[in-house]
Length: 166
Image (cartoon, rainbow, N blue to C red):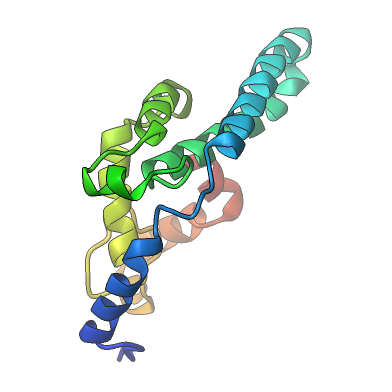
């Protein structure tokens, strides 16, 4: 039995209360452009370093992960400042532009990621709603699996296998 911490009405009230503060906390775009610029410089250096030694591939991979984090935040409209007026008009400022530029580097389509990932955040932790990106199953669901699927699930959830795949 799942114990609900909040009623549906309480959750709706919380969502309404935090909505005005979601995208408007950044003072300017100065810091995001600084972090993006540094990431681009480090990315170019890592490409050059990979030509010199194959061991720099790890460094290159870490920079690519940094780009994915920027992409992720852009898809949430939280990397660059979005004014309240832009938000009301459905505009996303520099977030959409940068996310689309980063698409080939991170291997995800901005629109698909933004819509699927937003749904994931809406239902994450609520086992009564289906989350297509869910990688964790309940104990009841695990116990209902056959032996082959149980072993496969345990292998897939091993950190050395799970994190490189995800």
